[in-house]
Image (cartoon, rainbow, N blue to C red):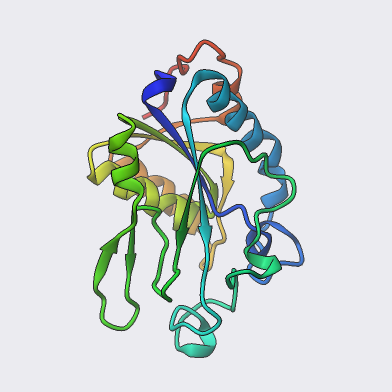
Length: 211
């Protein structure tokens, strides 16, 4: 894996997901901070682009349960819950915000109007193409939603995509969602590695990956 043609996508490590007091806390989220940060250090040392994604919802949206959706209120723009967790290493890179207009924004590449079903694109693909990126590594929260959907979109768009399994956790709205997400990703052609393996390889070449 060549750092200069690689992007590391860090999905939604925000207080509402990653802090025990967050409104949509992902159990075990705090366990991934050291390995996520190690992957970010690897990216910084090899010249890979780091892209942080950030849920950034309005106060009222059909995405939320109280307005007809399935989720508790979370990551409302400019709130504590929407801020990146203090334990997340932040380096110069890019931030892509999702759900800004009240859309369902699971993937870093796309969003869907929860009422009309219309799908739109974020700026991420254009950003990556402009930088000559061909390979993606994806980590963050949550495995069964934003990590999965980002990786699936990346595969559809032709990026070689690796999910860092020790650097993500599932929210599991339904028991077993995490395992099902991994199986779906495997079927669609995603590769898997660990952030620990990646961070130990400071040469810019990834270790053998599991398909």
